[in-house]
Image 1 (tube, rainbow, N blue to C red):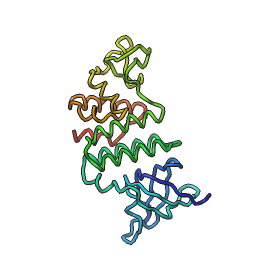
Image 2 (image 1 turned 180 degrees about the horizontal axis):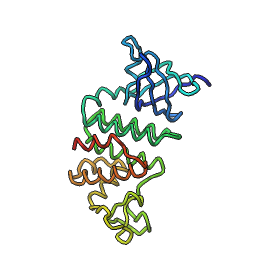
Image 3 (image 1 turned 30 degrees about the vertical axis):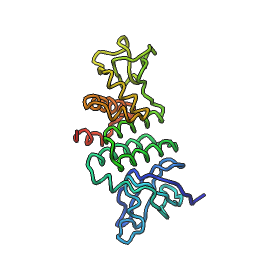
Image 4 (image 1 turned 90 degrees about the vertical axis):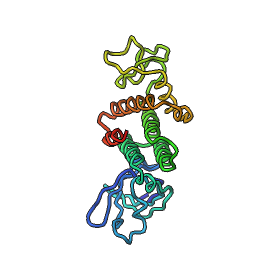
Length: 242
């Protein structure tokens, strides 16, 4: 069908001409979509504010040859205003949407869409450490894409864990026999925190020490960027706020 509807979260936008904008969105049923929103940069636009980064909307699109065209947009989640008002939230959200953009180059799943929406909603509502929300999102998003980190038994030989080393290139924690020279040492509390971030055990995450949180964040960033094969640019801004 040339016209279709879907729920989307806006990942990024850039200007087109004098009044239009190209909007890149992660949709619930159609994967990643790039579409032209005509006239949204005019003050008279009826749905320009609904197509800003971090916003969730129900949209109607016309299927074009290279770019679709946004015909209607109704807000489902206005998370952008709360996020852009706080720099920590803003940088974490940018890292999340950049990762979602990168992971869903080919074909997205409804689970990826729901995970991103849930992460942005949690950031906007407050009450959680923004970096922990980002770390949890990164680990879960990587898992949904087939790169689930091994966080208990040895990722290389399968020896029963827990183990004391983490090697992103080998897929997670490894035993002492498999750990290459210079491998990152994994303290027990950091390992427990990584497992809690994947499982969504927020009582454990919230009770973690600053040292464990900082260590886990570094390992998560290294793991995600290794498997994406290029850096997540927004992570450098997240790190600069710590």
